[in-house]
Length: 156
Image (cartoon, rainbow, N blue to C red; front, side, top):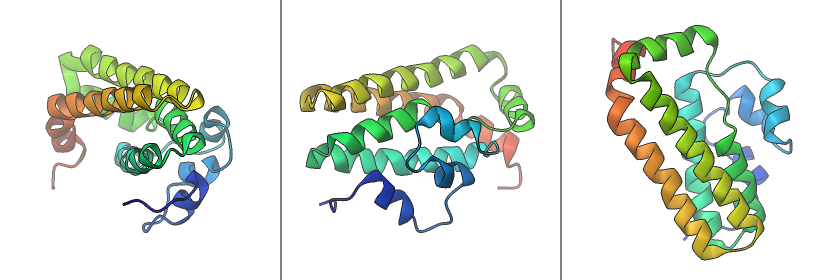
């Protein structure tokens, strides 16, 4: 299914060039990693989160609880886009900005529950929290992805 590997090995083996945030964050607590790197684009943040989610699913299946904990904390404390891009995102979501922030908060909170479950080695709680993270992502994407994509990348 998924090969056994640490989060550091996973990040080191990414096929595309990792973001500066991903490089700086290896082996560092999330709060330190974000403070020492330049803001990333929304697209690079979403790609990194997608990779972390895939790794987390495999780590849960293999009972690699330290990796699940680290990845969940990285998901919860993901970087934010640069101010100018964040402003464009807020214009794209318009009146839905409060809902957009609520989705982000729900994913953050679910990821912290996942990290806690991983530290307790509670597989059932981890699976439930991971489902909540995935649901939060899905709900936000269903509500806002097309509008944001059109606003940030009109030529695509």
